[in-house]
Length: 398
Image (cartoon, rainbow, N blue to C red):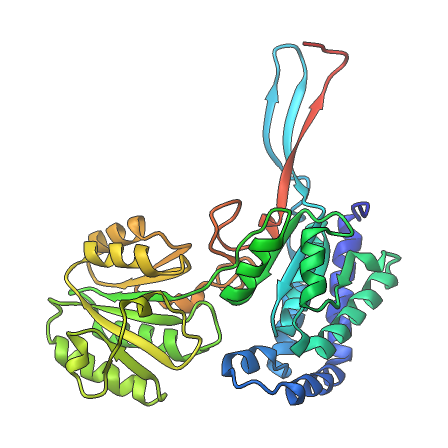
């Protein structure tokens, strides 16, 4: 176990990393081209996540700089109690120890996840996908340079260049102590980690997010939220896949026609239920199982629903537990929806695309958890800690 570094050193390493990313910006973008050229798959969302350009490097720099400006999440007093026998008792936040993250295709995670883990006093084991290997190794080399600048061990950030068999073996019998594993990727990756891991796992789950257009919706807001949620970034877990439209919405058909036209501008494939598939541009789906699917593609399902209560039940049955939004001018209906929908983030008149550590004020995230223990939604700096009891006495016995 690495000895906790002072907050001054942790912050200095983060700021050095920002400097090095600026210095090697062009080199990193160039190395990333090797990964992009080697990628032979046809998954457009994977390609989008894999690409490093100027905007992505800017985000990486912003992420570590912001982390350096945040309060130390370790050693924060959460509770104190003076025992009747004179003992002074405190409960304080403490690092987990070693965190492993398994992720696909996103070199920016190699910056953001390592930064959050390091700032919160954790050693991080990075297991990236083979498709982003060259980009990831370059970023890890920069982490090591930043750590060495301040005399810190390079083992704080370790890259595991494992294939699937080696990863499985490590999960089942780790060659070093691992306190927490976060798989960040598709459902197959998550199932694989859950099956083989021998230590606690936080699931960074699927999206499959819903927008409900209530009968008292502002229709312009509804159009903007749906189109933004579906088309702004199809590779994001906070993208929209399902739209439920209140059967009693005034001018419902006209609204659906306008929505179809807006989605068609982005070549979105639109599927629908028995009610909505009467529209020429909406194709009837084959199976109700489609309500469970996360698309990560220019594809959406539009259905009709009888009420807010029915919507809540449908979302709770089919969604990935990530994000859901109600569009309505009726605050009471919004409160009912937000209190009863079982997703990590609930929205009223806003896009699900905001479920993101940076957008929710955390400055970035390790992952977005759809678990309820120990953190739900974006896992930020202040969530990558556990706690510890400090008891000070002078010989008390029980």
